[in-house]
Length: 464
Ligand SMILES: *Cc1c(COP(=O)(O)O)cnc(C)c1O
Image 1 (cartoon, helix red, strand yellow):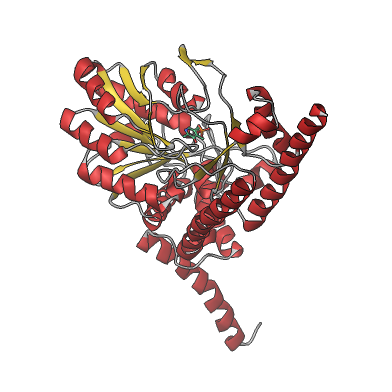
Image 2 (cartoon, helix red, strand yellow; image 1 turned 30 degrees about the vertical axis):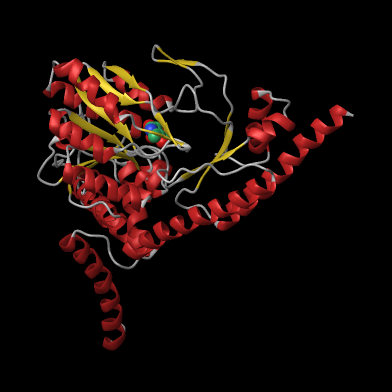
């Protein structure tokens, strides 16, 4: 019907896509180059057609046959309906769904490779779970607890993010809060206090839960020191690395902490690191050491949604190793750019950017003069700068000014939001997170200038 030479060319075009798929499945790594959209679609379609709900001749007589009523829903999931796992294990292969099961494996090896590109070394078992960071931490703590029923306390360097504390209580455990200490401008882990608590409470400590990514002026926890302490004392150590994958510095710290000490599991968000909708988290352990991530998989009750894994798989194939490395590099340079822009803004206004070298993602700029001169010393009025920015479409900027106490899970925190009951400054936070652009930074500084002058103008008017 068509001349042979043309047909050959067409067949080769098809074969070259097949080759991509074959290469992916045999190398089990990120492709170097990004896949084009059609290749991703074709790959997903082929996998979906391997699942029983899409067989040409299939008559389901069970209660879970992957039937989808709406075409819109079918399309949203590329026809993948069986989810992941079986009743006994979230990572188990589902006999009715060879394609979905394969996709789950592909997702986890892509994530593992992406972590390695980001600078995390010696990653062992990886599991991507369809719950966000807080719930994933809770699953990890529950798995630990089953292993060690006498452990009832989680030793927890304070971080003022409610989820970080709630995940402990959701696992039916109790937190022992350890306040941070001030070192220069930064708040750092009180390793001595942690060790003293481990020694006094002994076997009742289930684990230490540290946090890497957080708002400045809190620094990333001293995870290498804590890992050494945990190894020495025989106590488990879990790291909340919510958005730390995007920082090569944090990745290096994690690698070093599980080389030199004890780390049982590290938990990170899929949305904050891979730019996908909220819904997933990744739990990893060190190669040859930790079985905690596997324990989580094995104790997961029932099947689970595959959507978060599908989003991550599509994203990583569409980036390729190079695209992912470029995104990470861009973020590092935007971190420097944001710092530089904030510093020059601060010095023009008689403020300064707090020195927080232990936090490679977030900045804090003082608002001390602003609080005095423009807000008449009122913490409430100082905080209002945050809402003003939000009303002008600047999201994520955050203002801290002392005086707010808050109870979370039965703990009373003085000056909640500062990660410390006595931090000596009011400040404004901004973060350089993955996907941010230079335009975002410029736009933010423009609006900040406008809001700043507006509040100051009002204050001057009031004095006349
Ligand atoms: C975002 C975040 C969480 C909560 O994550 P979810 O994905 O909403 O569960 C916990 N800890 C830290 C440090 C975070 O940044």
